[in-house]
Structures are given as structure tokens and as C-alpha cells.
Length: 334
Image (cartoon, rainbow, N blue to C red; front, top):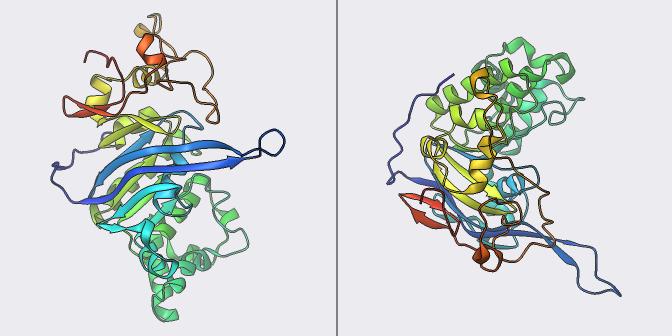
């Protein structure tokens, strides 16, 4: 499955952007009631997502990917920094103003079994966001629900069915239909194919691509599956312990990763070609440092095979290199 390239010139409209965005969680208290320790789930993320692109965010579990996606939609409140949707600062909006924008900002959740209410029929699940935003009369809402099911490849007679009557792939299609109910243009896909079999993954990814073309959607695609990223995404952000360490187009990243973490992530992907199985590849070593007790300097240096003295004392900033961005003192081949 290879997705066609899209025209994503640097001057394309910016749909979503963040500036120095952080989300820190207080955890417990210190000895004798001291101040709580902070988990730095998202720690100063700045990025721009262009109209109609699929921007993939990759990294190991616990690096802050899902938290970033939820904070961008203000499903969780940021600790600091700013979020802009088509020029509007979301962090400065009250609940009433934010509610008016929510139908444009939607999410497809990871687990198609847990994200649908088992006590509700499919029509009720799809109608709920429509009624919440005053879509129209009961007849118009029912017609829209039928249209949504057909849009994701399901028959409208399923409207009277319950979630337990569907397979995982069908449930995820219903989750996508619900996200599209109020005609959004920015959709966060949070590991939305990771719970599906490989053949079903391909079908759902093809559906997402078709819907993007039809509806001019912009995707923020959170995943740990680099094989999916290579086929589906236009640009990629690599995240480690709450920070972006590399930003590049998909083609650039897979052809020549500049950050050691990016290289090691790709080295960990299984190779189907038996001729390559015997070749030694560098692998990630050691445990991820605690986000409550980050190492001094570069937070990746404890696992980096190329770390030098400066990496242990000075934290690198995200810098532009060959039209890309990388946070490393010694970028690979840089």
C-alpha cells in the first residue's frame, strides 16, 4: 500500500500550530510534605501542521505522544505555551468559545472496543455529537447518520445494531464516522489502527486516505508503527521524553535520519528480507530515564551510542539542518 504524494508546499495554510507547549503533571509530594514532583509529559513542543497533510508523531510508549494530541484539542489543559487553530489562540478561549470550535477538531481513539458505548445503538452513537451541536431536525440527523455509515463503507441498516455485533475493524470505522459527524477539518488519530490485524489496518488506512481526499482533512497521526508511517504520512515528528528531537518529511527521515534516536527506532523495525537478517544493526540500549528525574544535558545521552562529553551537560535545541529540524549536538551525517 503506497499513498500518492500530495502537494504540500511550505507556504500551505497552517491548520494547527503549537509554540513551546508544555503539559506537566504533579505527582505526590516530597519528604515531609515538600513540593510535588513533576512529570514532564510534554516539554516545550513547537510545530506547525499544514492543511491536508498527514503529520505522524512517533516514539516509544510513554514519550508523550497521546498527551500532546489531547492537549492540542484542549481535552487536557496545557501547563504553558500556546495552541493555534487557523490563527485562533485556543489557549485563550473560554469554554463557550471553545465549544463552537470543537466540531472542527476531532479525535479517533485507539481502542475500538472501549471507545463506543456498548449500551447505545450505532444511530445513537453517531447522533450524539450532531445533537450536541444543534445539527438539525431528527429526520436530518437520521439522514446524516446513514450518510456517515455509507461514507465509511458500512450499510445504513446497521444503525439499529449495537457495538458488540461488529468486528474491531468495523467498530473503528464507526469511530471514524463519529469523528466526522460535524464535518471537522483537523482529526487526531491516536494509535487508531494499532489494535487491528494487519490486513484490516490496510483497509482502514486506505479509508482514511480516501476521506482525506474527499473532505480535505488534516491528520495528526499518533503511532509507534514505523511501517505504517512510511506508507501513510507526509511528515514525521520523532518524540523522546516529551520533546521533539527530529522533524522531517517521511522520505527524508527514512532515507537519512539525523538524530541517533530516529536511527535506532528504525533499526528496531523487523526486516522481512531474509538476506538482511544476519546483518548487525545498532539497537536501543538501557531503560528510558524517568520523566520525573530527567538526566542533565541531552535527555537521550544515557542511551545514545554516539554521546560525547557535551551531551552530558548541555541540552541541544531543535535546529534547522538541510531544511529539516534536529535536536542533536552531533547530527548523523550532518
